[in-house]
View 1: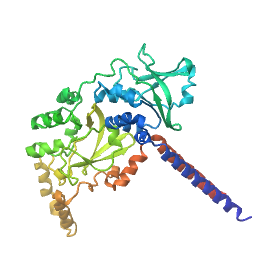
View 2 (view 1 turned 45 degrees about the vertical axis):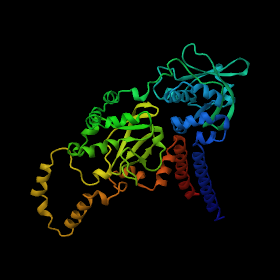
View 3 (view 1 turned 60 degrees about the horizontal axis):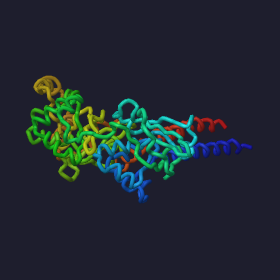
View 4 (view 1 turned 120 degrees about the vertical axis):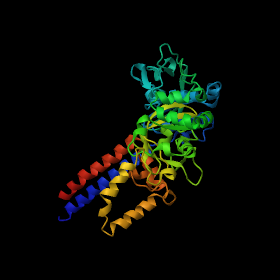
Length: 437
């Protein structure tokens, strides 16, 4: 009889551990990779290639619940014939629904019709509700898809099921794209006045620097190929302790501004899942002047090795160019690895240690250690860009690459985090209960 409580306790512990494992498995299974799922399906190769080229695949993969309407090679060829890459991206976003629809749900819509949100509507680029999609069960068993625009025709119809991941991802083939007047016709990135866009976005000081240094010409030359511009807002130039940029040589200023651009098209959703170091226009090889990324929930931070800057908003997303506004200046450790001179005049600070603190270094042990630390700080060549730990609260970027990748993956969707948290809560409640049995 004395062993019964122990048996009950052991059984409850096993139950709790099983629940935790089940929820962890559910968390892992809720992530998806749309390009990997379509890979090997020859009828969708063109569609899949444009998902990758426009980076819409990263936006799809970041959604926990999504329905992807795919086009065959023939339908996709007709769509892309006379469109820019930016227009193709918007067309793919219109074919991505932010809800789960399988064949059964399509044929059991309330009142035979439902209005749902597309990925294009979520971007905020749509006028009014034009980015919503009307799904209607038509006569003869057909299901049609059309824009929410008044009078829009159901040119796109459901063809067949391609694949599903229950409750999270549904991939369905449709006959045609979903379009509406005004969806296409985006101006090319090269025709956009870069400095005007930056001025209107609250990045005037950054715009002035790239013009006075001549770096604006480098940016413009890269815009038609691939460019991600990381533009600090005006408040970033008022940050306390910021180095005095006016003391930089012309060459160093150019390098700093090149560090604020990536030679690739990397919108926020793509940065969120990026792994490893990312080269900038200033990169010279061997990892010098590279950036790393830390994702925390929906936030994305760029890590220079000296500090982290949050991606605050998207100013322009016009494939293959994207302009992202960041909330602080990106200071490469290769340039500012020592203790940089702050922008305010340094003379008052120099007087203070001479008059008060300096005489009190009579204790023999602290002074040589402090002096040793200062010498190391002044030599950027002796401190690699990654280790500085001035921002320990977002330390994953300083961990090995695999750990950072794991953190990004674990944050990919809210459902996964909720499942693990719930399992932990169950364990916290059940284990004390077991102690009393």
